[in-house]
Length: 166
Image (cartoon, rainbow, N blue to C red; front, side):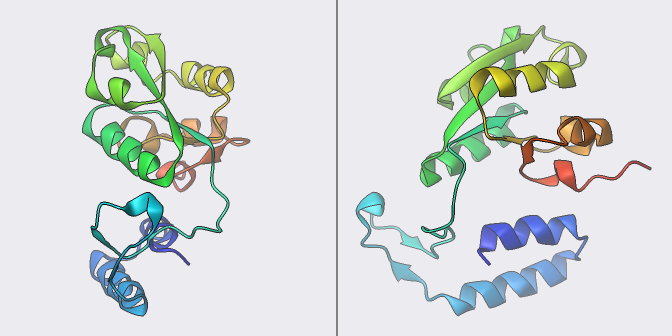
């Protein structure tokens, strides 16, 4: 199991932070920290090789969030060679996450209830761009049970699939 998959499942299964840290140390200790000589990583940084090169990956992911959270997801996707789609409101057109993404879709006006929280607009953007998965980020839709239900037939990354209706 890769560290990324483990952390995603660990946070979804409500392990304590101490348990997650302990398991992360075990996983990291099982792979020696070495300098990569891979042609894709010629920058000489040390890595723990968190990505399994033979594991099947998505080609394109839509990030249903904005700001720093979206930027972090986009950076990770870029490192993994995955194309990204940023959704944005009309006032976020020049935002960093929009500029960083490979594709962008305007989904409404400045108020979040008219854009980022409109599930039907996110679903339309997923279909229009041919995204294979959606990452809701944190907050916004990641905590919405109705969003998780609306994405029943779409691959979800992160907590969207873990949230239960109370």
